[in-house]
Length: 251
Image (tube, rainbow, N blue to C red; front, side):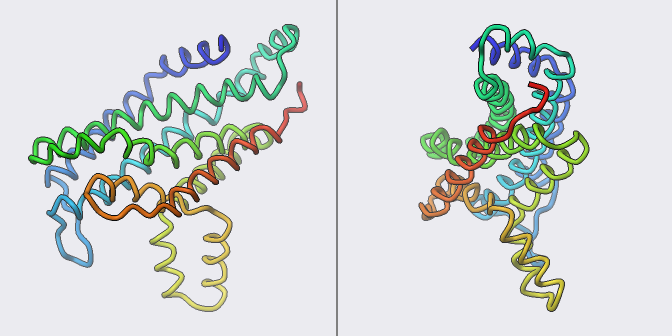
């Protein structure tokens, strides 16, 4: 646990993450307050139930970006500083070492996501939607599944790919996963080779949006689709397995 605590302290010291969180909160409050106009097919979205999934998706993208930024260099930096050799001397396995570092990054990412999420709850209460508070915690657990998966995926990929390649791949994983419905719409519009490419991307990248939207459904009183939650948990499990399977040769 000492490895995880030290890694958490290092994540907390990163001032750039706080800047991103503050900017994210401003964006979220603008969307919820009407200062920024949200529309679907040219029709302005003003109803709370309609606005919730859109704002939650914005938060998810911001949270996913923070997860990639926090997780991308956590493990590689330890190897570059040669602090990993001090760990091997103590007889700690590579899997345990990597898992504690990855867990520190995931906790930091979920902490930043929670700050953004609280902004939605505060505005909901200001709109008179007080009953939403009772669903706030279980909804956050659903909402955090995709961000946790992105964080673990990034930590795993950072073990085997160079920094730039890992960053591009993990950012693409996060964006495509959270924008699955948009790509599904594009797939229905295009044809030929383009459709094949889009369908291939949709098949390769899991639908992170599916589990995220269940949190919005819970908050707004809509039906929660359990199969999407189970799918999100499966993705989270696979990402954790990747962290176990991948190894660093320097060890």
